[in-house]
Figure 1 (cartoon, rainbow, N blue to C red):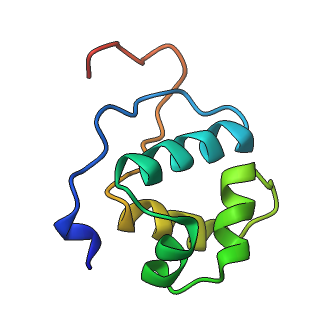
Figure 2 (cartoon, helix red, strand yellow; figure 1 turned 30 degrees about the vertical axis):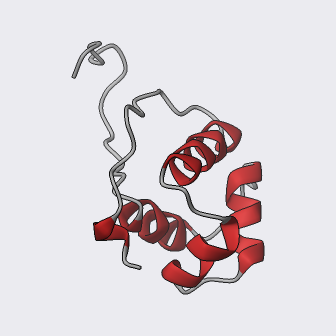
Length: 89
């Protein structure tokens, strides 16, 4: 199974201020895509522990690996200045 074959997450647009916030978002996206942590780890080429730590919000994870997992899941990171976020975008 390839991630491209899965439906993208429904709506996941939240401000992320803490690593725990990102972890919750990743967990939500993974469950919406009907994946187990071990499945996502295999698809991403990481250890299961990395996915567990990511979903728990461990703040010291390697950024590039986190970005790679997000990309694989059909998620992207957008950085913008505070106060420019508009609902519905």
